[in-house]
Image (cartoon, rainbow, N blue to C red; front, side):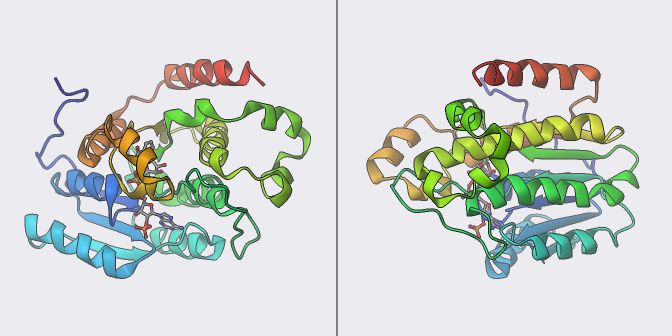
Length: 277
Ligand SMILES: NC(=O)c1ccc[n+]([C@@H]2O[C@H](COP(=O)([O-])OP(=O)(O)OC[C@H]3O[C@@H](n4cnc5c(N)ncnc54)[C@H](OP(=O)(O)O)[C@@H]3O)[C@@H](O)[C@H]2O)c1
């Protein structure tokens, strides 16, 4: 029995504008297909590789000829790119749905920290700083929609973060996550998703009137595990779901009711994690 109901293919997004980041592959591409089948007025594929974005657009247009599917560049590892993308989105009349899905996992090897041109550790900038910055910069366009949804793709593995690291560096966490001497490659993905969760926790009360939901697709067979060994990938993928199943879970968050309880539930979960700090 499926975990989530099959998404509707009725034109429930008629007149609405939606965007999905990292929608050239994996869960993002499948999420774009699900939204594309619901007849949005505009669907923006936000991608760092325009060629693979165009290939994704072709797939969507083959299924929905004449649809308004746009491929816009977005590099989440660059604040300038995030700002330029958001500025373009804010020129739209409104934005009804933003699915912030793009993310990276550095894998399990013993690699050294890689920094972006902005000077931050790359996983931290893509998964946390870039995602939260984009969320905030999209607010003007989201606020012009009648019932906006901001869906942030996190992961249940935020609960695996090394909370000793967080506790030890709590007063200087912003610097600690970018310190090459403190970097542990195999722990970074988990830490990034915990810090993302903490950021979303602040967004929920701050962005009243916008449905802010942090969600997880569950373990899915995608390119995300490319930094893990073949053996690790085989072990992970033996239990994994399809990217489409992950996208069904992610897109189900779009209609999630806005209520105080959403924040309360998240607070309870986070309290469990934070209780270990
Ligand atoms: N797969 C899982 O088991 C799982 C479980 C829990 C949560 N998640 C989350 O689900 C989301 C989607 O991951 P996925 O599993 O579909 O992985 P994926 O197949 O590797 O897709 C990741 C997407 O993010 C994009 N991306 C990465 N770095 C980017 C950057 N600097 N700028 C713009 N886009 C960038 C990728 O673009 P390129 O193709 O150009 O690299 C790709 O489109 C992530 O947030 C991930 O953390 C996944």
